[in-house]
Length: 415
Image 1: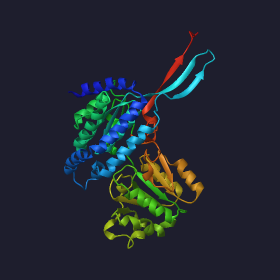
Image 2: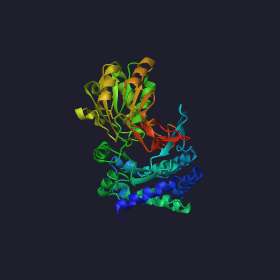
Image 3: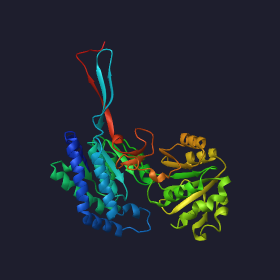
Image 4: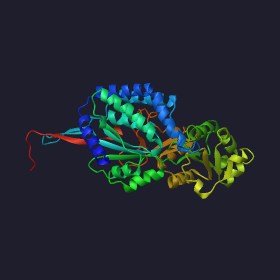
């Protein structure tokens, strides 16, 4: 079947979703969660085939890898989404005009949402659950690196949909080749919205080439500013957790900005990073502070491109700054608008940082690793938007709806 026919099938199926009850959708999501666990061996076997084709040193390897625990977590997220209230049909505004017209603003699904993503098979489950809960159909275009895993996942989903008598085309997996990407990017009238998830190069390619509306998500160049009044006992675990919890995710820490007055604290702040073999690219002042206190083989002089880089690896930059103003300026110049953190005990400084830093998520004394839809109480997430139109930050159910105006009259005419 050609791509256009596949997309037409999804468009047709999306209209049928409007008539499926919220109760039925909740049951389907719980059933898919149960089936994912029941078919875990099949999914993990497929995932291993994909892993065998990737170098374990590749930063994408961790994103690609599924485990028993990760599938259990995915299933739990789906059950959480099943319990969330539907975002569709909410009355956002309700007014009566002087002429008697009753005007309501009501939330509705987009219709068909296309997701382009790299080696992240968990996205297949996450996107399906959020789209179904919001009565959207979805088209999945995963990377070729994860194609076997994604096919196994979609087989599980389709088997449950068939059991409930739902058109399986409410979720469609496209081939992993570039041709299908091009088809989706230009499928105006068949796809209503595209959300890319992956590297900055992928997001930039989608943004520059799509004729379908796009929401940019995913690219994270994240900083932690350790202030003159920062608490080392808080800052040390915050930096370590943000950097090492999962290095391949977009909320991982890439650069520490250190107030010059706290250079003496730098060895203590960085000491846990050595346990994870984190390579540090330090500017001259930070290098001098760390030399002899951090493993020589893990300490390198920073280069100009060390700052403003999303490492997605056990690597991190350190830059010394003279003031809060300089820290904010550095962030607003090179960051991606994802997640930024300040460690300080001074509320006025924190308030200024949170107000002036241009990012979707801004943290005070907490690591950027919390930038996640589930951590924000949103259930699973469809992505983290780094733009300002429509949605910003972790995107879940409400972010994948739009609205329509419903006007009720009694025969009024406009003069």
